Image (tube, rainbow, N blue to C red; front, side, top):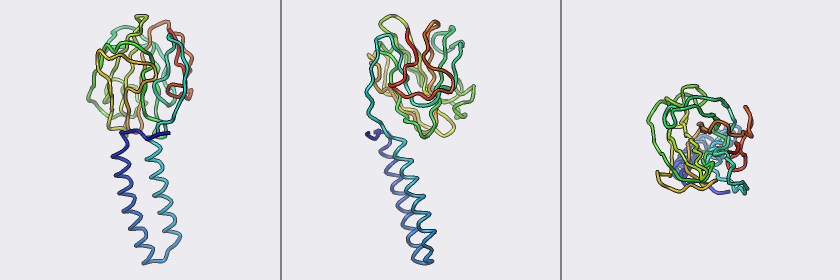
Length: 220
């Protein structure tokens, strides 16, 4: 396991703040001799540091797939599977699969298919809770479309939540995408929507826990 580069500043700031809290905690202990309070606050500081560090963890994962497989781009839970009108790029009917990422999930995002990156766009927006129906169109978000060698196109969208306030993406139009290659990161609770062609064979269901690069969403 490694730590994501997006976490360097946050982890250092967290260590500094928690270190100052622990120093104040020790000073309070020397004045009051309340061992129970010292231990309680120390345990709380350690738990907070653990939560900050684990948020930016990147586990090593070995995965296998065929060229027609569509891999899950994010860790989390499947909260939406439905046929919808995709209005930003395709402007037609697509199968939407939405994955909610809690603060306890790994928050790196990966290309679900290989191919040519045809479209990349960042949208400023609101910070509604990630499971809100309008978060897909109203929240801060980024949209990426990759065209598979078969000609099929898949759109995936990073969506900021009520806590997440920064979307990071590392791809641009014209780039060649590879299945399982990292394309972005979202800080704290958030969501990823994937829009698949009608007729895609799905391998996931509502409320299923999924893992990036390990779970197959479906196949063409």
